[in-house]
Image (cartoon, rainbow, N blue to C red):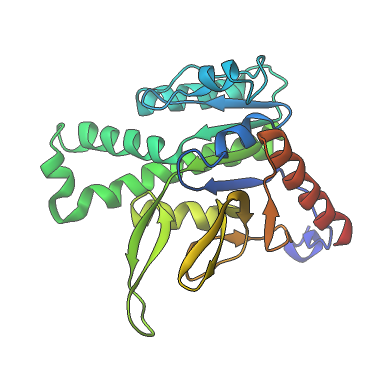
Length: 258
């Protein structure tokens, strides 16, 4: 059969991969924890899920994988999801920032005899770590393609100077990741959503700050990306249940109008 005979015009549905980032406490975890069928991957430095359950912010029976305190732990957990029997429909990685730290530690130990100075020399470590990070994305793609699981990565943000090639540099929200990691993650994701409080500025003063919003389109103030046909902003409501319901409705609305 010729390659040309294999050409298709069919639109194949694939489970989504989303990167949701924002400042601490904005509601990223409670949104992800209220997605039906989700299993959560926490890390040793940021295991907040028991507290969220106690507060009633996520379901008491939300399944949580063993905390990953090393890169090997993370790979073992993802391998179990890929190879063992289960009924989970998605996985939430909380957070990408923690996963990147483990990635850098792994490369430092395996390639530079545990020397952070060696990792940093000529920035060689970041180049090697990028290939290791790509392996994580490949494993997550395998869950999407072979286990029909959606993927949600949560991440922190930082305010950093943006090198503007068209004029003066300015501060903007960026993923709290190394620039090479962030670039690979945003390229891979179907959607990059920036969660923040909605604020109006009047006479040089900020007003509001209580309504939480998911922004889906790139702005000079923050990174975002939208391959799903989502509206420019999505109200997160008053809870994680509201945030997930509104995001789900936006996704379904985009699919139905396509």
